[in-house]
Image (cartoon, rainbow, N blue to C red; front, side, top):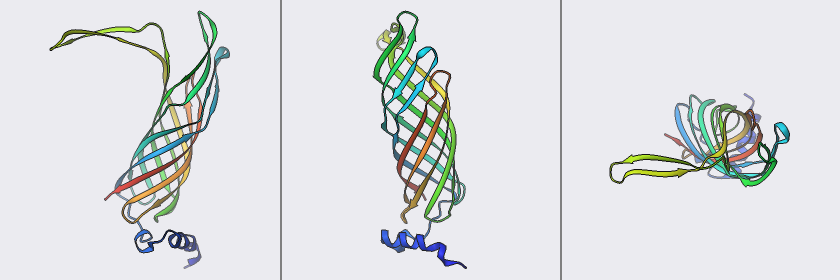
Length: 219
């Protein structure tokens, strides 16, 4: 047996310390895991029709991930990320022609991801790909507010005004690579880079991001 391939892992264990607990191996197969994450998304410029455009600033967002490991290599899960980047937009309106807006949008992304861990030990590179949706809310009012009424058994008829904004929900898919390390107590940390492609008619950015997640395997 060629023992040289285990030298990088052994060196990592020595550097981290507690080799007995950390490097004893892991049994993630057949188990559920969850994590919380921070996601840094790079800036992006999107060009649209009739001179419209959106310039999105870089931003740090937050999210969570829930994944089931079928074995030591294959996993399937769902992650959700929210961010609120600043942006500058130019759009073509029927009344005023080209109009510029400097504001802050809300981005919500949900993705079903398949992950392949290249190694079956506690330290492994991984690749992932997934599909889901991306919801973008410009937070810019769209026309006059709408008044809605409903019956409340205590207060009677209640009427409220609801604002509408320009927003879009579009199909999105992603692919990424990263590194993962598991500790002996079921805790793990992973980080990677990801590319999200939004397949929209008017809003179709390509968002490149880097994330770091801290999670737990549910034994």
